[in-house]
Image 1: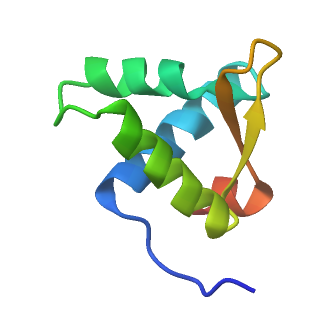
Image 2: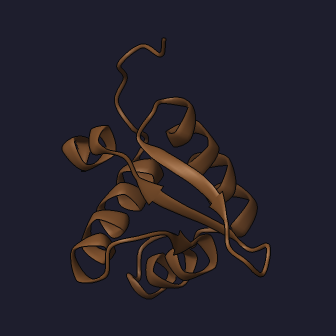
Length: 86
């Protein structure tokens, strides 16, 4: 069982982006697409390895699920707990 904790600023941004994208089109989102949206936000740059590490920690916390797209690209989707935090 994971302990409840607060997400880091990057993790919070990832959860918010996922929640917004999930409202428009429910389902898994490629991490590359999340990286692109975060890049366009104009805040601090986010690099792929940092984003994937944050996604792993979010998955460990039970806030998102990691999947592989048919073309083997990494995709993630919010869990119900992740929607509540976002």
